[in-house]
Image 1 (spheres, helix red, strand yellow):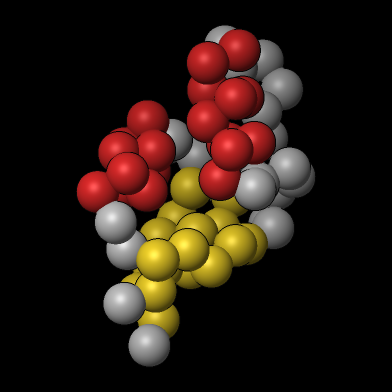
Image 2 (cartoon, rainbow, N blue to C red; image 1 turned 90 degrees about the vertical axis):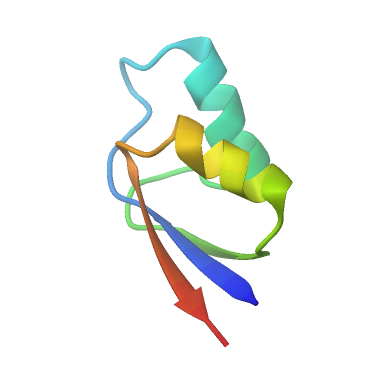
Amino acid sequence: MTLKITMTRSCIGQKDKIKKVARSLGLKRPNQFVLRKDTPHIRGMIKKLYFMVKVEEVE
């Protein structure tokens, strides 16, 4: 299964740890989305960014 992860808020004003997690997912700016496989590793990253991303399941 694939996840569509959309960044809904900017990283400006966030802690460095949050910025690094967003960057490692491939997210640079608001309204940008990336497609990632649904793995525990990716789910953990999404939990760190729960307040600034929207996640949808895509086939």
